[in-house]
Length: 128
Image (cartoon, rainbow, N blue to C red; front, side):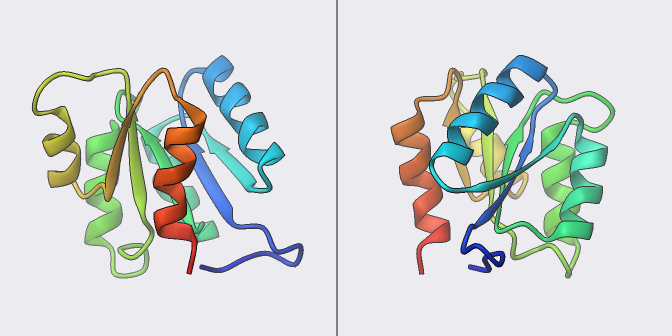
């Protein structure tokens, strides 16, 4: 895990719903994370390439470039392949977890976000 000068892990939250993005960002900041935000898959991919966050929380239903395509693009790129991606989706149908993992996501979580559960999944990738 890389951390900034203040010892914080950097998390990129790719979420098109402003209210969801704002709420989860605030909750993560209170837990000590540095949070970056992107509103669509295309800007999320660009931000991962430029910022190399420690972890990406990726909504799957995104405009411009959906989360599945964004995850595939990141995992196909040598420079971003190692950045862990946790899929966040309201789609909790049978097979959705497998679909997200096949697209390159490293983990999967459902919305609405249950913060303790999400934090536990994040710690798997962020704790050395």
